[in-house]
Image (cartoon, rainbow, N blue to C red; front, side, top):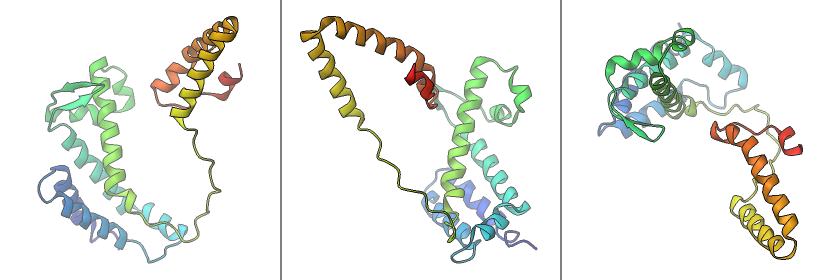
Length: 203
């Protein structure tokens, strides 16, 4: 019998309490955290973690949690693309639909489906998978260079453009036009939160 078989239902019961956002939600989340962590050996290896997360019971746990949070999404009005949308419980069928079926959805239905998918994905990550321990033999990634300071980048660009407009207006105009054109290329990627292909930046 799997290590998860005796605990899946109790964890899912706690997930229901979390999804209902009642007074006991914080306690339920703490219980889920402890229960999920207890499923793994102390100081587990990647192989040990993989054995558990690849099991049928783990799939039953995550599938059950996704169902619970999907049902919860459709129990209250939700902000979708800036609009507050009233939802009905039977609209959970939008979330359950296959990709093939979703192709025939209206634009509004597709928006709801996408929002529900994001909600469920985040809820499962925050309440289940975030509590999977780190493997003792996990590869340590090399340090990553810090991200550029967005505020400083913008301030430097504005100051540079102003200075060029004062001392070299033709250059300022060329820079402005090139920047506007480049932003037009980049806008679809930014809007969809996707990385901008570096080939564009080199164009």
